[in-house]
Image (cartoon, rainbow, N blue to C red; front, side, top):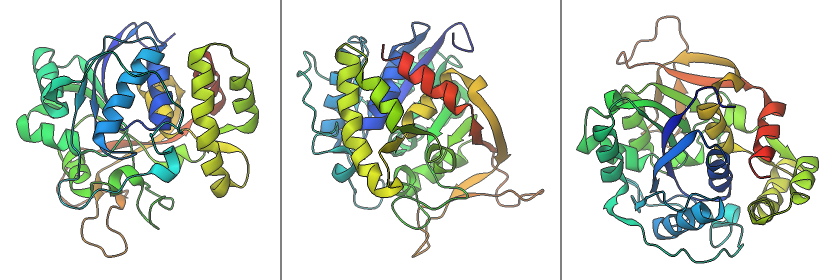
Length: 315
């Protein structure tokens, strides 16, 4: 069971293989109402990620969730995509049936703002791509941090190396200005960074267990992860893959999985030639800067229980 009776979740994402597995985790939980999905550039173009979101909702049994097309580029810099990680179609080159419906006319930022205005304090947001849509939503509704119940972000590398540069993680590096705007805004924020996601991995044995689960959901997800694990073989040296976005979904839905965290103001380096996009947590006893609200940076989780729950969500 989830840690609460029911919850309503807006997902901002760039599907993406690990985004797909995060959606599977949420979709398998009858007590979780996915109220909307905002697509953003990142793992592919926003046109592709929006269509992937529709395809995945069909695959995972949530065909009525509205999907909105969001930002196709960062606020300032040029976009950088990740076909080498997620395949040419964003889903490990696995072909899913074409969706029978189109994205809604609203932009992702407009959909999020409308939903939280209509349901103040009732909707949690899971953000597992670049934070451009959330920054745009803040421009439309400065009260967004008051209207959103809780924000869980997969992004950043706080005390470990980055994955797109020596210091920067992909989601933050893809739009540093947007991430800084979100971190400064005052959300009730949990940050799931590379510090924990690179230690929370689907091993080859876990992937083999998934391969044995019958049904379209499990078999397609297994095929996604076969592609993903081959990319990660080049990093880890063995067949396994980091579960970035699924872990963020799990922390949102099952917060008891968290066993370690610290609180600190978090900001993003915008200027450094070598450190642009770096996520900086000020862990001094008396942080200075601009007195922004602290974020909770997750450092430890019940990894085995999370992976068991992830597998159960695909049965």
